[in-house]
Image (cartoon, rainbow, N blue to C red):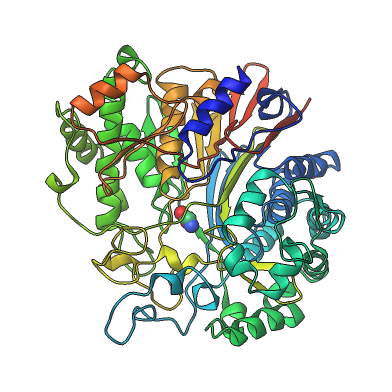
Length: 569
Ligand code: GLY
């Protein structure tokens, strides 16, 4: 069964042959867990254990969240880190309240909407993807520190210790990290700190299983453990970041670092099948579109159609397409442009949209109003935690592309993000990845780039029901929506809901992507006959989900990637 699953994943892989799966254990053992009290699902074995260790020391869910954030920064340095940012959705059972925290990176003070255009006004895509100009002001450390100050129980230092140990003692190189180093080796080998950290002395990618030590990162984390967020935004670490940026002709300054502020926002909400969904509001597009997709599908009897049937996939693809058209038309940083959140989630509006998705044939992207669509890169990380009191957290964090900008602040072990690429370089012009940018998402000083990250929490009758999220750019939205659909509408057990075939349709490009394990051949044939442009492609999501069950919590870490679901009884 396991080899069949892996083979199917291999067939779905579009640009590489290595697919990550736990090597020493059957996927299901590491990727699924049931426990009465605490539950943690993350994309890293050491990270899950780090979060659990905080509970074992008497810490609360916020201590575990902060410990997981620092540990995953070490364990997945290609996906996330203290040089990046993220979002947190936190359900406090005692208050019966859901908080949304935005510690996303922001554009430097010296940035401008023309900064990635040459003298002729032509876009230069690589400038926002590689090197110092791609770096936005990191928000992760400030977010973690401020959230911990407000809600944490154990001393701050305790939350950083597991990450320091992991960075100093190292961990064996695993397949996805190997793949990421190999993929970005051209830029990483130009950076002395990255070369020293992630390559052999001969400049080769180390063999799988080689221990990866990050001693400089351990030292930086020690400073943060001692000094809190000032240890990152001021003093020697800040000096090293700005010195590296200046040497590489970037624009991030000490003024940027000193002025970073986390923002508390109001989660977006929607009622779906009697459940209350809370998710991330703008500057993420994720929450709005997860809710839109589910609400468009709600009136249809999907269960009768059956999961992965041609009818169900056809309708789901149309709902996704509609949601992405709205994304391109209306979304951006709400601190800079009004985003019509209430209108986009208005019941009457969603009913009207829902009526349009039932066309007998595939709807061509060109038949919908053509408005610009921003591009997002594909890596990021997500983790989900629940505790014995019924609190839940869902947090998605990122440095954007694999190894972000490819720039490391010399002597610090910090990989700096390339979140500037989540902005549009210019209105209406395609970027390197074939997408075009919109007005609301142009670069502006202090502005946050548009995101798709969708940390989501669901309650039922004001009690915890489910928490989930995923990495993988625009695919996050559709992967999260499909997992909820599988668990709620199709009543699949959580593991099956996460492992099931996923599709993705984002209006532009006008393609219906299907990930392994693929749909039945006759279903794909029927979808093609209805006019869908079906393509097999890896989507890159890694859902980390926790659901309440009778005995406690059921945790699942997506079997498509590395990860560990583990609980405490
Ligand atoms: N950088 C990926 C996202 O924010 O959606």
